[in-house]
Length: 579
Image (cartoon, rainbow, N blue to C red; front, side):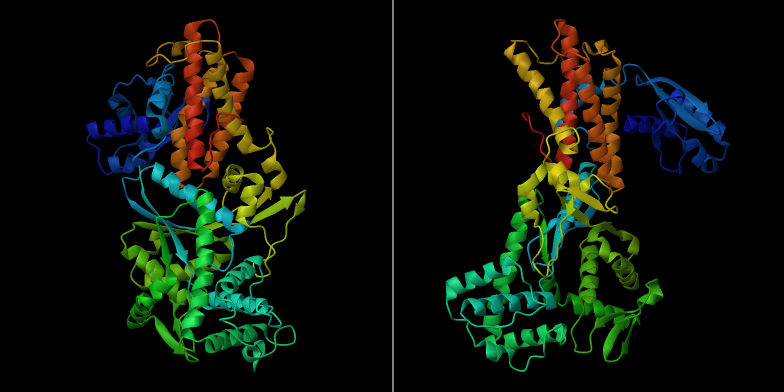
């Protein structure tokens, strides 16, 4: 409805010969007594039009094309234009929904503009846990919503396959392998300890026996003491260096690649089973090897935005609004993660994306200004980058908080969560709150088959509609809906009128959820639509003897089912026909 009213107003302004006015905005009227929708275009466009707002509103009303949608148009206050819809305006929506099917609610609002959404991008140092799951569900849904309203969306996972954390993982795997070979050693406190490390090490031992075995005493010779008596960071760094020396470059590279590929494959499989598929898996190591990182640093240096201090190369990010300057190259000559991120974001923009959207954990909030500062220093508009911060998901089982630690290996994986509550519940629960709000994930509620479980409640509405169709088929009734708006005038009950108005809101909700990056709006809408249907179901009989009334009601609930199916699909949730 909003789109059609927007088109009517736009056509009227064009017929009036008015150009350069702000974009037409149509909103639902706050007070139903004043109509169904309203626009403030006369208020915001009065200056550009060169006339008082009420005069512009009056001329606009006079120029509006005739439309069967409208029962009345009136001017209110300083220049608002209120629209009252005709009684049958909502009735025409039902055949439109049924004809459009899965396409109902989609639009070309984005006009094919290219947008990249990068999300999850967890270091491949372990399986995805429930915290990563929220970023996965949120990022995937934001991408799908943007695609639904006409943007050309590119989904990307940035694989952090270079740097110290990957070296810690490779060393952890090799040390576990040595233990399987019979070597006795004190496993580093700062190494990765999860069962998955044992699994990778076991695969190495199974396939290669003792071929990679070296005495533990040789590996630990001269290594600084571990914590708490010593320095755990110096301890693990020395072990990494010894591992590379003892194994030699080719053999170390083999262990490194085995650990990396095993975990990347596991992450990819996990996400695909969660309904999350990417267009590209982008390698940080490939970025470094291409020279892109050094080129970005050199661009900053040539522009005069760097300086040397204590042997390190610094970016003068405070000149662009950051709270402090940042290191690009350490005193040992190694580039930082930040330097790689600068090159990566510059590469995104150079690939032609009009906007790039990063979905990060809330603990990365301090990273946003420095990345934007670097883009500005490189001559790019920082406004082309949107960073959406996702708060932590706290898991509860039996009313008690589940503790998690990635390094110690004590965490609930996304795979375990999916097996426990199902993909549908996980996807829905993850996005039913604003991304910046903490999420308490109640496992018991997610598993329950009750009206208190929001995803069950919505899916049950869809299944109930199909149960009505099944009952009709058992009774031998013809439930093939008649064409067009035939018989829909029989929908006069209050519950029916409420459902029609709820259906009309769906395209508006999809648009708002996409443009504002707020999938929870769609979750709330689906719950409201499901509630309206359940109320209708409990109050009225659909398979009545009156064929015309039965046809009208079947059309209405089929439209409800289609919208439920479309909305759940955008959330990555199934719409079962039986429950």
